[in-house]
Length: 475
Image (cartoon, rainbow, N blue to C red; front, side, top):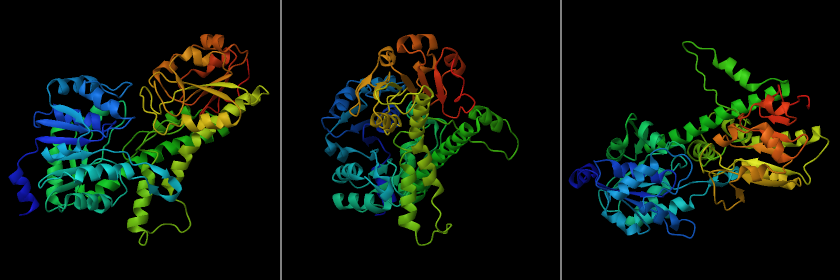
């Protein structure tokens, strides 16, 4: 019997499992459960000292994701109340389901060797494979190196289940395309790329994702093309950020305001003219942009190294962009050092208030935050760095204060790393009174304050891309 026949015999997808209760898995599970087309959704979360709390919270209808996440808390409470969603660590429940999605992080421990850490993903796939039944769909949403779905993912599932992908069960790659702060909206409105290892798998994946889309549509392709699509779209976004970050560094060197230049470039409109100007800043964080370039690079090295036609001896444009974005926290440190130098001081013994530990405004997502390398550089130079973030209450890698006045009080300098709304209304008179310095220092990494108002009050100001202000007369 063919896979298509097995799927027809099984009937429509009614019960779904989502493996990985994080920024991707939780909203996905909620939207599956809310769809009238599906009967029930299990959320699977490994029970560990650091994650067990998620199971308890989710089954109480409470989201463990903090910060501004529109609609998520209400929808989660609704599906728990209606008994269409339940979170468990019992992976044997997978045997009861028609489809399972997997959303587990895939970081790189060392970017230079292009070796990803697939250990958590492999463990999750292994758990799923043990309980696959004929006619089930497995859809991997995690970003992976191109070739992975038809490679190690298929191998693990087949070895654990003793079934054959494409014959006994369906297998597809359906990469997530969400951003923290707009998770529900992104899943509903973004087009969904799905790629099966065969046509039957692709059709089954389309059946799974179509009901949760509102304005978005399903775009079908091969599994490998879907893998390249996800890694490439994040690589291109990283490249766009790097281009404007480099422009900001150039503008600083030439004494002009990058935001004036940006507005000028963006003003040219017309047929055939495309602009994709993003904003410069203190650095790029998050789980995706910081590593998807390396998945793409590894993919071409594994799958196409011998046939790739590329300028001999030249480095990858994409990897260079990644390095520029990784440099921006160091540039923030350079701006800080320069500001202290203007006062004939150095960082040794200085107190610096770091505003923003999350990498994205108004969220609690601190994965690969650019604030961390900046903090480390300043501590290495002898500074005492105190951190504020209004959305992060428990962070294993650093101590965070949610009282901004206490972080600012007595500081020699403050550095804004995140564009949280709380930082857009900083009052220079109030801030100066707390810092108790004749010439306090402020480093704006996100262009969220009015430079002139702070300079007027005697601050030494430095800002990314603000070549017009960074050498201002000290009032």
